[in-house]
Each structure stands twice: as C-alpha cells, then as structure tokens.
Amino acid sequence: MKEQIATAATLRTASVSTSLSSPMFQIAATFMLGMVMLFGVGFVDMSAVHTAAHDMRHAAGFPCH
Image 1 (cartoon, rainbow, N blue to C red):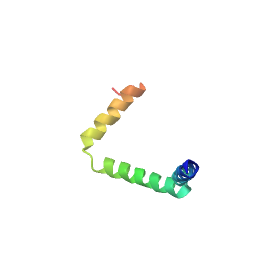
Image 2: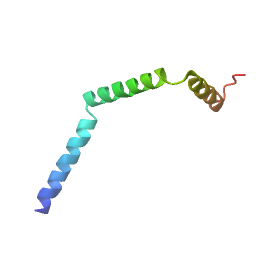
Image 3: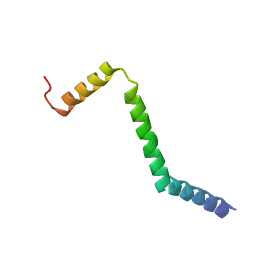
Image 4: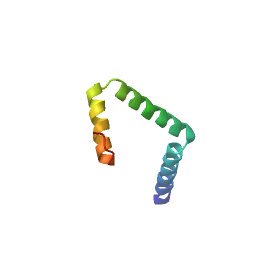
C-alpha cells in the first residue's frame, strides 16, 4: 500500500515538473510577463518612470548630472 502511494506521488511530481518545463508553458509565461511589463509601464505616471530610471543610473554607477 505504501509503495502505491509513493509511486503515485512520484508520478504526480514528475508530471508537474514536466508541464512547467514544456515549451508552450514557457512561451505563455514569457508572453504574460511581457504584457504585464508593457501595461505596467504604459499606465504608470511619467515622473515615477523618470525617478526609477534615474535611481537605476545611480545604482549602476553611471553619472547623469
């Protein structure tokens, strides 16, 4: 009985990891991330974008003024 439960759990785990590494899942996840980034930047206040870019330049060590 324990063997059957362990085997079923192993098969379930293998099937989940296989589906997460499938090319279609990766394409869909990349598309969704891109859409979130596009709409996130598209609807944000411009001063917030400027401030974030300015702070990143300083964090990376690039002089900007």
